[in-house]
Image (cartoon, rainbow, N blue to C red):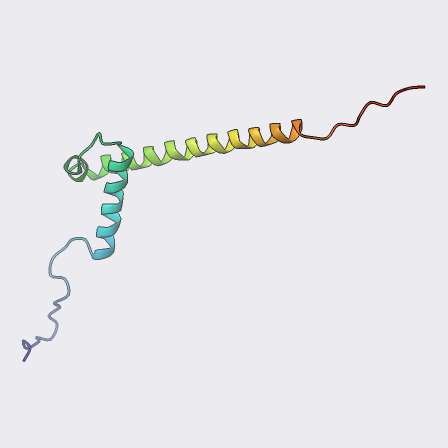
Length: 97
């Protein structure tokens, strides 16, 4: 038999902390920072970093990657426009009589 339940007594979570969905988000962000750091930081360095500093790093890395991707897209468009400009068919010269 199970333990008797007392009315008004919640057994789901008896302490404050992360629920499962927040833990996934936290660890995904930690992984992203370690991955973006190219091995410069260890798990402990990032895990014990103050939250506001961790958020600052995440914001800066996201901004840098967005700008980098925009530059790549601009270069791709520039190359695509240059390729279509040079590959346009030319008409042969017409000889005058």
